[in-house]
Length: 88
Image (cartoon, rainbow, N blue to C red; front, side):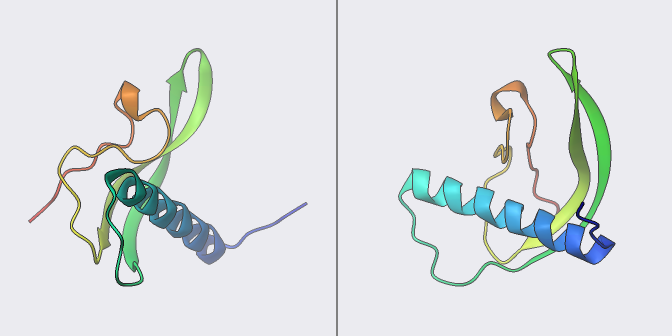
């Protein structure tokens, strides 16, 4: 049984987000020069996909890397999940 603190959960979520961004960069052939740093304000929400309940997150994050609008990060991006929009 693994009990995680809120800080550990946030760190894990940030690590997943960094991994997704790096996967996007690898797909596009771009090499990231600096370590990615993330700050976020994300809240967990449940969503229904093909009759199964899944955990999703809504909110905002900042990363020291420019990402294109409407980029899909994570799983089920072809179904519209994980879309990001730049906020100025």
